Image (cartoon, rainbow, N blue to C red; front, side):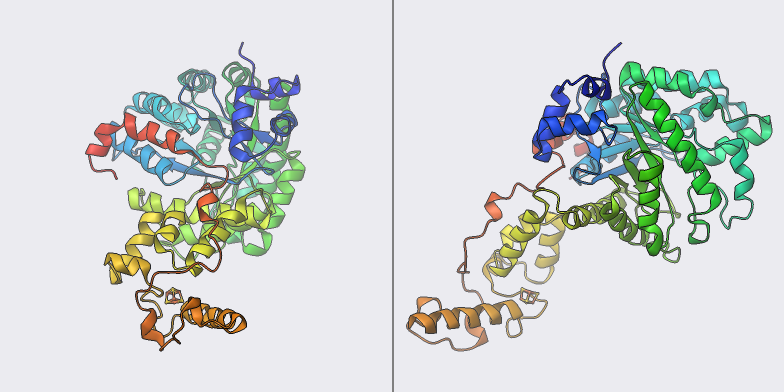
Length: 496
Ligand code: SF4
């Protein structure tokens, strides 16, 4: 049996994956080992996932972002699914969950694992239901068979809905939106129709043995997460959380890594409470949250309603954020939705890292601010979270190349560009102190127009060139090109 990351860490071994993670996070390998050994962080790295560039998920490290992809019964195409993987990695997903429920699931999953430099997560229950022909037909044998097969295929982490128990179901009776987790509703339906306990709970020890053999990480599903603000932090949610705490400790006994999934829909004033409670109940196992959405009123904008909650959760200690796209509650996201969702969530994750003073996080902000104040437009675009969008928006009104040297943009215009006015005033103050006119000229300045297309003069040397963007925690360019190179047919089909 292969050694899992947590087993190696507990025995004092710093694995190659831990060394790579330490390099990416700018931390000491020994610190990484300690965090993994104590279950405070996970390195989802199935021993069969050869293309993986190892990463770490834990509250002491850069906050990570997951993107969900996958086909549905109405859309199923291998090239389309590879293109979605490429898009997700290109826009900065740290992990990708394949939630496919359509056809060719095996082929698509194997292709994802073969091509992906980031960990791949799945919900094996979906495939089991599809193969069984419906939730009521599920058997424990089939569940274990699907889980084992996906582990052999190289899936790095799996959502297992083992925490919802028969005794929890009545606690949802008074809810406004019932059970909104797909896996949770399937398990509840099975328990009601069979009059038995959750089968995933019943075979949990066998699942642990499979996970230990392939080093698959648990992502313990929150089947009873609230689907509306009205249901947030209710008895059902917290009863399941208590079970997830017990399951965390049981998995650790098998030397299996664990992270725990969280809500959902939570008002702002209760976001931190959710994170703190999970950390306490689950002994610090990494918290992987979906949003949470902080209001229910904005279908079409739920990447924003949820990114607000995600940023707060990141500050409070959530380790990974599952993105939400503008199509949430409305339909299957397309590539533009994936881009918008990932941008929103990388902002949330980075904001949390800045608030928590993660090593190197603020350097990125400072470099961009320097470039902005120095009117280094190309540098500013290059440093932007989404460089293509920043450049496109600028060029919509000032497309000509010479405007990349301008000391203003179309937002305020040349006369009212506050940064240009302030820079001029600063330079004047410096000039008067040294007996020189601004920027060393012997001639006085003649008003706003004179600055229209001047080259910029740095007040101080920009640190931008020294910033390795993104500063911590995301993929390197080699990893990105691994997806691009291997999916040429996808790119020819229209990807960027
Ligand atoms: S014009 Fe306004 S928005 Fe544009 S660079 Fe100047 S201060 Fe910034």
